[in-house]
Image (cartoon, rainbow over all chains, first blue to last red; front, top):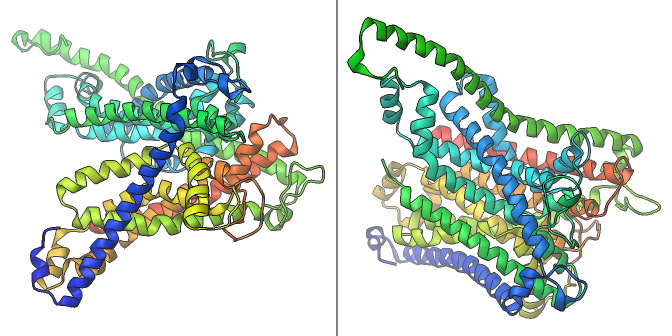
Length: 295
Length: 316
């Protein structure tokens, strides 16, 4: 720590306090870093020995030596695909509406905004209940299928896409819109041909972050009925072949087993999950940095 | 865009331009309506949540009295002789949340003050992503960590505590680290929103960095900090996987952190996992308990939004 000018003129006691406070804050940071480090160390130590091709290619089994997570991996890919197809159009459309069209003095537009803020803070398991009551059973009655899981997670992460989409759209300077309008383009032409292309990096970052949240979500999938023991990969989004598991569900199922071998499998699954998340977050950070401050 | 060709700006062309524009305007209104529908979906989500929760909750209260639910001290809805007292679940939830918040407030605030007031830009650039990294770890990973490392190695080993495999303490502390990024980043926003003139004024009066941070900046950002803590509480109440894995699933009316507890979220996940029949009391129980959870977090969020608004109004 370099001495700040303010420190030179104060009394010894105040200075001691200041130093003590700095140390306390650094301890806070160190403790957080330490826990993060321990967490990664713990998972790596348990999981790396089991992280091999058999883990990815085998199906779940009651014998730990033969157990793998292939259906869970495919389940996650299917769910995330459904989620992506759902959140991109709906999220971007909502963001465009709120930024470009909505008149904030109208109560219904304010309601939509407050509502999105609230949705972002509803516990994920409540979305699971919504999925169970509306998509799996109830009015839509899809059953425990990929589509129900994907849409439930889609609804859960939609606020992330909307909020980051709005920020990206807001970051496009008004001069771009004015220029386009002055050339005779309508409002929608301006949005479609100027504003949206300019905001793609920001929107893409938000979508990647939303998906990386969806990949790790476990609780809502438990509630909508992801299977923990499944011997086939999903073959569609609805119907008989669309039962599914997912990576975090498989990990949870293995954690719940009493034997240590299954805990190691769980750790290997976690390493895989964290690896995927690291790649996705890396991509998001890369996009954000590459296209930042373009204007 | 045929209309935007200035060289042919005859009277004829300008008429087609006007006609073209008005023709496009009908399409514009359609697009606007479509976008509005997409925005409406988020409102429908809330309506769907409230509707599905209330419908089954009302049915549940037809089977079990409201009084029995809210004041009963025994929770065993799936037993042959079912008891529907929700207090053990609420006490379990509050116990774990309290532990998490006791961990998250000092660490989160310390981190936020350091980032906002002390850290140099370069240090900030390294530290902020680290906090975000912690926020990006799926909760199931925290659960694994609490069960396989924190309880045996830290609590039993390092601290020598005599706690069982499943206990509220381990789940709560690890959850504190999950909540920490929420508390830290919202508090930091609030601290950074305090105008520089306040700090400069205090420095001008001879205050040192510590006095400026703790007596000027923190009080000025207090409403934002309260919002951060309240949102942290809300996240802790709603968190499922850490407690499902590490805190056990024992409905237990206790405030002893060493014991195994069941939270509201744990009960929902554990019950929904088994394939229970629609319309059975067990099925309705999920919704009644879910409603309780929803209302608790809704109250927290409403308070937080209030406080956030207050600091935004003052400084922005």
